Amino acid sequence: MVASFFALFYFEPILAVFAFVLGPLTVLFSRVWGRKLKYLHKKVQESESSYRSYIQEGLQNFAIIKSFQLEQDNYDHLQELHNKRMKWILKRNNTTLAANNIMGIGYWISYGLAFGWGIIGLANKTITYGTFTAFIQLIQQVQAPFIGLAGTFPRLIAMIGSSERLMELEAMTMEKRGDPVPKLDQVGIEFQEVDFAYGKSKIVLNKLTESIKPGELIALIGPSGEGKTTIIRLLLALLRAKDGEVCFTDPAGKRYEASAATRDWLTYVPQGNTLFSGTIADNLRNGKPDATSEEMEEALRAACAWDFVQELSGGLNTVIGERGLGLSEGQAQRIAIARAFLKKAPILILDEATSALDVGTEANILKSLKKLRHLCTCLVITHRPSALRICSRILRIKDGKLIEEKNLHL
Image (cartoon, rainbow, N blue to C red; front, side):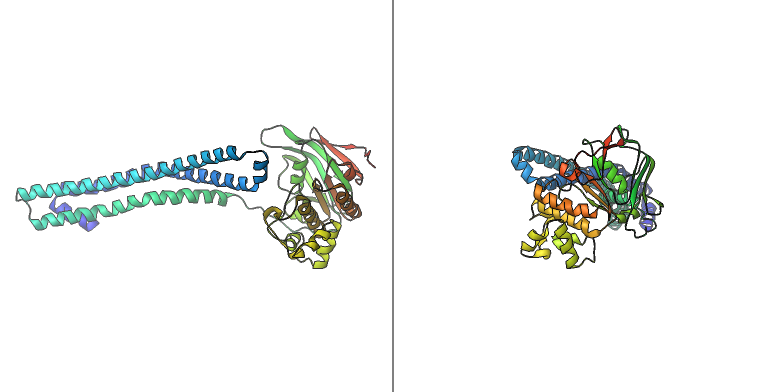
């Protein structure tokens, strides 16, 4: 390109300068245009994400959609998301096309000027046909690198837009597990002046202080939204207290602050269906990877799940779909409880874990839970009187604090 420029400058300085200046102007234009392309590319990605997420939600909740006769509403909303997605795609494509056309026009203008200049020179007999041909080729060689660079900007902008979304994920700090905690059979729980609030909303926990001894079976009750789930998340170190301490204690009284490492001491059974796609055995081994068939059977019996599991065509090797597809909600809940029993962690947390079970099945599981009360610390979130009967203490969360209530269900 440099040699071509000086050769052209030798023959016609004005034309050489014009050709060279027009090239950087084209690149500058594409850079300015690229900012808009980058914005549009991000909008396309966001609309694509919303569109696909809504489709996935609809497939997961098709029974609810059918029961509430929401087919038309969901179709209309999906159509709205589709139209929004297509709007941004068309805007991006039209902008890219316009940018390419404008850059192409700039190239052909300079090429046309050189051609016109050559025709005038031939008419005036100031240049020869050989010189004219050289001019045309030199103009092309001077501008080609700039045009090529400008043409790569739309693709480059799309790649930058995509990479920035990935870089946002990369920028997230990795959770540090810290030093592993010792293997313990019994672990207690302590809350010391714990404060917590979600953002600038009302305070959820306010100077919460409570001590749960190893081996206690505690019922945690209270209206929805009072902070029961928040307490669980603090214990699992999924949230951090704004102030105060959430700790675990060993039999010697040593304190361990809640962290990713202390999750080894906990097993958690949340509400609803929490199974993964795969075999029943695979799901159970999430609690204990090296569990034997005998250990899995023992856990399933304790969770009142062995009878229906052995009746399945594949038994423990029966393949279930995502979120326990192929099992009833009650069956899936019992397998989740069995998974928790199999881990044999020193702290067991049950969050309305028997809500989908009939009275008889729940009673049998509670018997199994009662046998564990001196082997592990149990925290049960429930409102069922049958579950409250086996608890040694009842703690009600109110106004951000835990208040002990007399157990009238004993």
